[in-house]
Amino acid sequence: MTNNKTLDKQLVINIAEQTLTMYQQQTEVARYVVSTAKNGIGSQQDSGCTPLGRHVIEQKIGSSEPMNAVFVGRVPTGEIYDANLGELHPKRDWILSRILWLSGLEEGLNKGSNGQGGCDTYERYIYIHGTPDTEPMSIPLSHGCIRMRNKDIVELFEQVEEGMPVTIVAN
Image (cartoon, rainbow, N blue to C red; front, side, top):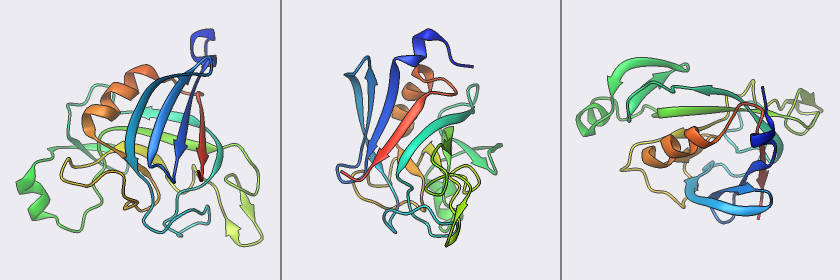
């Protein structure tokens, strides 16, 4: 899946700073503000936390969808998010525009299971995805995923490939 062009690119998500930075050959090429988990750092199943460690982009979803397209179970619903739809479904955890589905690489930390049970980023459905523009950034508010502005996730989506390294750090 990867080619030489993507091998020199990587993403680093910094939870303390609430940023996602793309590096190419160790040089910062883009930085975005994000929102990670309200429940903090962690990798256990059902914790609602954002996992640390080394990951890859396992799957890119939504390449042909319009901005603000709504996804449920990684499938576009045909809806386009707007304030009215938001008011109709105030409890929904909106996954919009694009999905980068992450997979952990570190057994017992973010892959497979450990003494506390499941800790698998992929099986926990941890994504980098778009969220309504009314949602604040720079504040941990997600259910474990990494939320981005819709224009930012669309822009990022075009620059990344499946298999690209993603490291999530505490600070």
